[in-house]
Image (tube, rainbow, N blue to C red; front, side, top):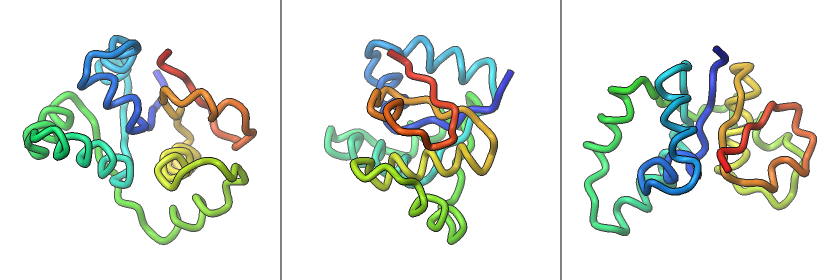
Length: 125
């Protein structure tokens, strides 16, 4: 099976048992999965805003195989080169990490399909 890079929207769907959570769960069980720390920051912010502890959630995701990847200079440059003006830094961080790893970007953000970023994108819903 392919490698996947999970977007914040995919992890939040899993954590909130939203539509598409089953797809995220199956990818975590069957594939090698990564997440940019930029995207993790988005998830962590949502957890904090709901009064939830961040570390136990991170640990449980790591226990099922999710590996967090640092956002370094090379990824910053790769993110800046994505020609899709409405996409956020988080969107670009996920896409650039997927590009660097040759992985599939897993997201709930349908707008990603409107741009040719050179990255294989799979939507969870």
